[in-house]
Length: 352
Image (cartoon, rainbow, N blue to C red):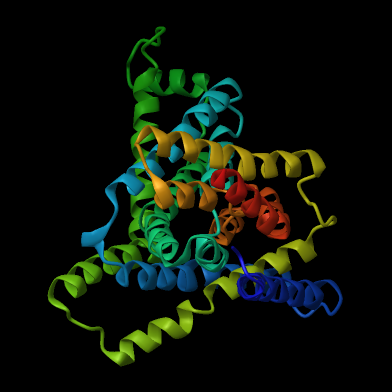
C-alpha cells in the first residue's frame, strides 16, 4: 500500500521541476530578463553539456553485465511497434513525415523515468522496481536518445538537399544519361548517401555520442575490474550533470513564456499527445512484454513506467532542432500534472 510518505517523495520529485519551469516563465514573460538568443543559448547548453554528462553518469554507474535481456528486448519491441504505424502514416502523408515520426516516438515510448519514475514506482513495487527502472534509463540514454539525435540530424540535413524530379532529369542530362522512367534514381541515391555522410559527420562531433560511448566503456571497465573514477573527475561530471534536468525544465519554461498560448500546439494536438503518451505507450509495452513472457513485478513495472509522462530530454532535442517543440512541451507540462493518478490507475488495474 502506498503511504503518505511515499506520496510526499513523489511530490518532492515533481514540484521542483515545476519550480524551475515557473521561475523561467516569470523571468521571461514578466521580467524580460532574457533575449531570444539567450534562451537559445540556455537550451544549447543543456543539449550539448548537461544531457551528455548526465548520460555518461547514468550509463557508467550501471552494470552492463547484469542487464535483463528480456526487459531490453521488450523495450526494443515497444519502439518497433510504435515505429511501424507511424511510418505507415508518414508514407500516406509524406509532408514533414520524418518529423512526425520523431515526435510520435518521443511521445509514446520515452517516459520520464529518471526523476518521477524511481520514487513513484519504488512506492508501488519497492526496491526491485528501482533496479528495473535504472536499466530502462540506461537503455534510453545509451540507445534511444542517440537514435533520436540521428533522426533529428537526418530531418535537419535533408532540407538542405531537396531536389525535384526535374532537377534529377537535368542532372542526368548533364551527365549524358538519357532521362527515362526508372533511370532518375541514381541522383536520388547520391543525395541519400550525401545526407547520411553529413549526418555521420555531425554525430561524430556531437557530445552526446562521445558521452554515451565513454560511459559504456567505463562501465565495462569499472564493473569488470573494479576501477574507480578519480574523485576530481567524478565531482566535475556530477556538478554539471546533476543540474541538467533542472536546466532542461528552465529551458521549457522559457519556451512556454515565448509562446502566445499556454497550449502552443492547440487543444486537438494536446489531446492526441496525451492519448499517445498514456494509452498507446503502455498498450504497446504490454503487448511486447506479454509476447516476450515477462512475468510478475518485471511485467508490472514495464507497463507502469510506460505510463509515466513525457520525458524532458526529447523536448530539449526538439527545441534544439526546432521540430515540434510545441507538442513536446505540452506533453511534459500537462503530462506531469496527471502523471500520478494515471500511474495509480495502471497500478490498481495490474493488481486485479
